Image (cartoon, rainbow, N blue to C red; front, top):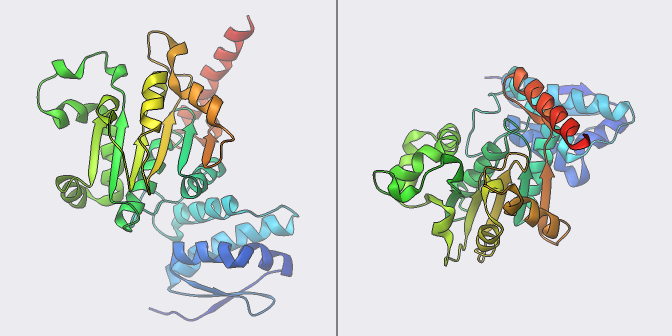
Amino acid sequence: MSRTPEFLPLSDTAVRAVSGPSGRHAALIEDAFKVLIETPGGGVTITGDVRGRTGAKRALRDLSERADAGEEVVEADVRVAVGEAQSTGGQASSRTVRKGSVSPKTKGQARYMEAMASHPLCFGLGPAGTGKTFLAVAQGAGMLLRGEVDRLIVTRPAVEAGEKLGFLPGDLNEKVDPYMAPVWEALTDIMGADQLRRRREKLEIEVAPIAFMRGRTLAHAFVIVDEAQNCSRLQMKMVLTRLGEGARMVVTGDPTQVDLLNPRDSGLAHAVSILEGVEGVAVSRFTAADVVRHPLVERIVKAYDADALQTTTR
């Protein structure tokens, strides 16, 4: 397969934009498409196989157009450009994952991934279909596969089930698994069924209800608290204070979809209100524009948002 360098002419402004601070932008594109990008002057050379060069060129052209139009190019733009190039045939689809690597499809997703990578505690807030849980699972699985953490722990309240776990048949895994279906689907996409099974058997991947986190110190682990809008304030404080040495935590949820008897008891909105701005804490908010499911889902979310707004103004 040919790995002949291919030259892509770009303006000096575009070259600086696609290179990024300390070559960071170019490095992201190189890693995504398994190519080498160099800047000999007047443009860039791309060395790699045909498929990799094709994808890299798509991303580079998109970013260069932004730069030439006078728009600032930041890392989030690079990640979105890479994701779009991959989904249009330059590489595998963004849900075809290798070693936990996932490409965002929107700027909101890109900022979320940056926040998870750079903060020990990150909140991901927004409606269904925005990729909050999938991207968090991908981030955690990637860190586990690279040896950056020892365990991936996923926890969520079972409030929405309307049942007490103790009354359900089976052992803990059999009780919890039905509520964890979205998580298992994401992990299977990212790791493959065989590796997921092996890691789970070695207790490197654990799922448990929020109540089972009490009294534990979660060190060197990547912890995902899913459907956190259904955590009480006490549960939220309890799980947030489980963080130990070398641990990271992502808390996901939709503050508008609280299933508690008294929605005001939700610990998610309360935690965000008092922790946003604290050093080491990031808050990423998604909108209907970040929905990546069927196009109809975005319109449904917008319709419900508009109805909620009318209700509050009556």
